[in-house]
Image (cartoon, rainbow, N blue to C red; front, side):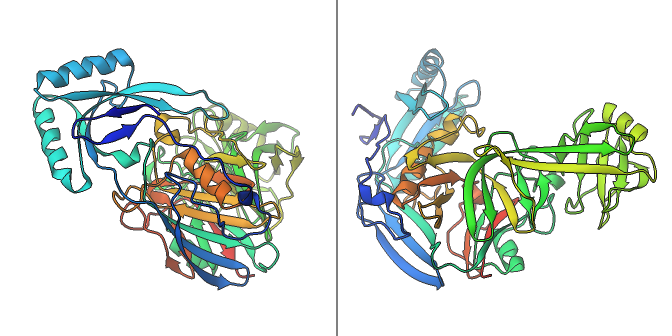
Length: 489
């Protein structure tokens, strides 16, 4: 394995370490693995187990030791910490002009199922042990004073070779003995964010983990909106991003698949229109459906058709008002507002037809009260093999694939048992988190035949019996868009 030494005498490997998992990792029953920990130098993990309730066990898993330290990373003109070789070489010259000794580091982001590998270059200065962060900060200040944009980085976050450590919480739910059910929750509304603890308490859940990604690029008061499909109690509350991964929950069964959603408005006069979205901000010329779960006002600058439970148009109004309980609102602006005004006339009927299709079976899901869907971030394992669909799922960047972050993971064994796991990260010396390849290895090690990455980073949270059992990287539990709940009945 090639190695590059940075100033300070410590070494960083320029490639990921992959482990061939033993046959025991494909076990059919939900038992904690006896094989060596799959990450790093394959240390023997320590674990403690707590029986939560019938069919549910919680494991506290720790492995590895801390040997990583700090370095100073020079930012490229793009603002990123990596760039092309010529760009990086130009930064090397700028650093040398300050009197410091830079290191040019080749960075290879490994390939995934739907995206090739990517090579980039970083420029770094110095490498200090974990307890010498102040020295790294002093060097960073010197470089900033010289006009360079830099940041202090913990090397364990890079995603390259590491010895850890790792701190994970794992809930194993035995399909043979578990007598409860699974559900999704968006809290009190789609638009608002809430903690997993609050949603678990309100739902009476014995276990809860954060769900899919939520939209941080919309208006501040709407940032609870899921990015992708959300079905709660058989009601579609957020449309799918076509083809992206999702977990489908029904009773005490769970399935990882990809879904597509379609919503159509059919007016009484026979005219139909595609509905572009559900419970989100509207773009120009879009027709959007808002349900009573939205929790915010419809956008201004358009027309609202207020529908009762039977689809009767009970009011036409200028948009920008709340969605009353027991109603839905078809909102249009631009061309879509023209459609609403022409076809959703007062006292007429507009039927809203909703369909959620499982793209693996090509069959529509029955939108019954026990059906729930949570959008995933990235598919990790399929049919027992690593299959990372980062590009399809919208997360094929260097930061998402290679770098280590806290992770929330969901897996299914061959017999349908559910595995929920969190790997804490961004805590130097205590836990390094995982990149996508490491997350996939970890779930295979636990026995998952299918696995998916949910939201992570500061959102990663696991609540068991009303108690937060992991340590969120923000220092406190973050409000998130939705949660997966394990209910006692």
